[in-house]
Image 1 (cartoon, rainbow, N blue to C red):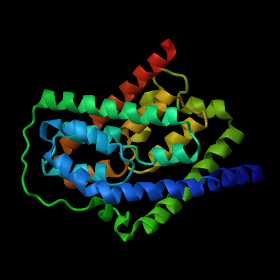
Image 2 (cartoon, rainbow, N blue to C red):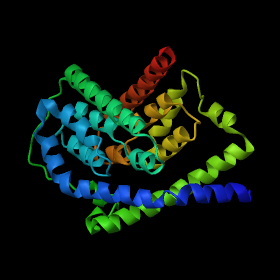
Image 3 (cartoon, rainbow, N blue to C red):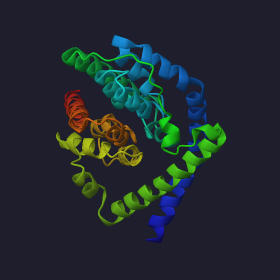
Image 4 (tube, rainbow, N blue to C red):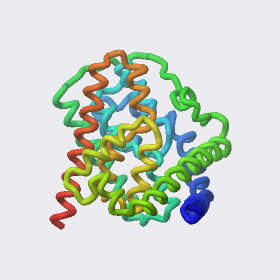
Length: 282
């Protein structure tokens, strides 16, 4: 057990400086481009899924939550909302960067998520052809509402994010290391149906957890070899942080919310299955 704890501590704290630098850069991006990004999404109209998928990929806490509020007031379409949800990277990027993942792997995740979000967003809007109002409703800052404290300055915010994620990664590493030690990598892989064509259906469910926990767990499992790229992709497609919880808070049409989540789940799971099939054929 001592070895498990020491390994978890070493694996966690050696990435802390990289996490802080990554969050510092991301907080700077958010503070510089959040207002411009919101205005672009609001003015995008029929091109909403295009701008939404691109802006959603920016690794920060604001866009998916902001988009949820914009959708609740029908300033953006459901296609734009889902495009942003699908492209949102949450904690995936800082973990991949801090763990030393190759640029090829990082860009593959980002590009695929952006393309899937964009295409699915346009298709959904085309099928539904929903008309939405472009009124002057003032949008609350959900990042502040969810206690991200992004307005306290980029250093304070970066430190807060780094501490929170470090604690969580430590917990995840302890659990994973203990699991690997007592059950072995094969057993962990069996739980997530590793190398099974239907594994993405499991990871997509994990991705729906309305918390950064989902992206942290999935990314760590992928880096540890417990799940495939396709399974990780499926879960990261459905993961959009606290946005799904906020959806039920701000959008009163609960049936509509359920349909959005089911659609998100099916897109994530089926995309993962397709990615798995392609990987087996290549």
